Amino acid sequence: MGRSCRCCLEGAVANPIEKIKDEKPGLAVRAELIEFARLGWEAISKGDLERLKWVGWFFRKKTPGRWMVRLRVPGGILSSEQLRVVGGILAEFSDVKQLDITTRQNLEMRGLRIEDSVAIQERLEAVGLTTVQSGMDNVRNIVGSPVAGIDPDELIDVRPLVQQIQDLITEGGRGSFAFSNLPRKFNISITGDRENSAHAEINDIGFIPARRDGRIGFNVLVGGVLNSQRATPALSLDAFVLPEQVAPLCGAILRIYSDHGPREARTRARLIYLLEDWGISKFRAAVEDDLGFVLPPAAHEEFIDYDKRDHVGVWPQKQAGYCFVGLHVPIGRLWAHQALEAADLAEVYGRSEVRLTVEQSFLIPYVAEEKLEALLAEPLLAVFSPEPNPLLRGLVSCTGAQFCNLAIIETKERALKLTHVLASELDLPQPVRIHWSGCPNSCGQPQIGDIGLIGTRTKVAGQSVDAVDILMGGQVGREARFGEVVREGVPCDELPAVLKALLIEHFGAEERPVALAS
Ligand code: SRM
Ligand code: SF4
Image (cartoon, rainbow, N blue to C red; front, side, top):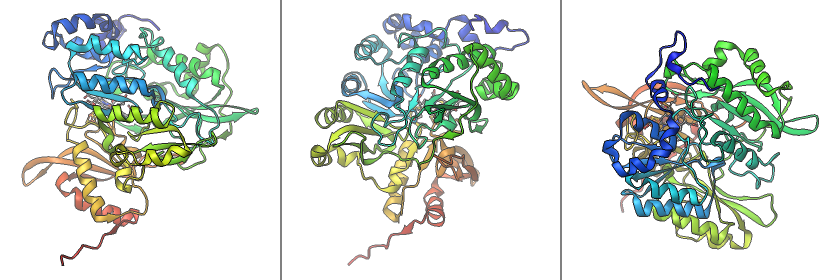
């Protein structure tokens, strides 16, 4: 690790982001926030606009001057105090006061001004929140089981491990120069449950609980990727690690990826390309060399033996007398006052904690049974329901054209509107997971939906219109697999009829009888 200038690599043609990093490390802007706040966004150079993503500040071309700020919420676990600070920041500083729960159990605040960044960062840091390394060539938010420590059937509580990885890669939240010049983004997930709740197969490193010689540890998957070039499920590293070896293994893999991962073309800079170039044996040997010990092969006893849950609804905890209540947040979007209300509910009814899910919703743990009825009667639960309509329940959507720089189509509002229409016309026997992505980058994870929609354009009567490619057959949990494209370039205007037909044909949906006017 530590080669400073990637442009000088023999034979390498540096891509524009490598050049930007060579001129000045992305993380360097952390110390310059005061200056950016003083100068204002219009004075910030193009290079620094990119670098600011290293500290979670994302310039939005659609709303110049109003930024998206991405946090890190390891394993999706937040204290009510932290959520209150986030809600408070939005209430005070944001024009839109919007907060999005992301597909990596994380939060994005919208509508903020760089001029307020110093005050905002101070408030976040005062409650132990950080935005550092949440974008660009960094390890993104660590995904973990949202029911760690409370799931009656879990094998190992991964909360300390999630924190160890977060501390390693961010140097305790201060920012790590050692781990912030990766060839590209990097995703890590770890679960100790039996249902693959953190989607190991779509991460660059996925830890799955396994048992060897009577001890619970993890089998390791590597190289999962979803993007516009390819969707490849993670491969087995054929290695088993004990809990105390999890963070060191992450460090070793990251050092190897940083030193040897391809940097010439951004599109080929993900870990999977290094794995394919070297083969698993050479890669594994390099990891062992870095670690200084030999990794045992993957344990035969691996635990992904339950169907995956979305954790919406009321579920018993392992702690007698307590349950957790999963609340569904339509399209993962909430407003400042709702974030503040959610923090209140967690304090009154739970133990001052909320947990975000990869389905863009949240749950309140430690609700005592005797308080459950009162919680279920709270007005916020009429909006964030523990019993949503089955179509709404399975809806996941990326940010889309409203704010995203790369979007081809608008997603969130369109997805919500369409789902309400379908829900009013159809009865579904079970939830159907419909995942929307506004472009092939796949942030909404369309490949793992029962139905996946990827934004594109098509021509209708000579006019270019919003459209989607439709995928089907994605599955999560014990037999996870990626969906495949079944229809290309379906105009969005035709989606109500097309989706209705798919839901009837493949998911047992029945049309509701039309009410006759009396
Ligand atoms: Fe993503 C780029 C939003 C999860 C693959 N993603 C972007 C940007 C930053 C583009 C931009 O600058 O506008 C989007 C920000 C829009 C905004 O204003 O919110 C964006 N990605 C998101 C989020 C918010 C979608 C959501 O609504 O939940 C998710 C944030 C996760 C987080 O908290 O860190 C998000 N993105 C994902 C995932 C899913 C996952 O990680 O499980 C993927 C596919 C998995 C993967 O990476 O293998 C994903 N995002 C991408 C890519 C393609 C990366 C690649 O290898 O080519 C891009 C484009 C890029 O990085 O150049 C991208
Ligand atoms: Fe933006 Fe495309 Fe990601 Fe959606 S999938 S958030 S449109 S980059």
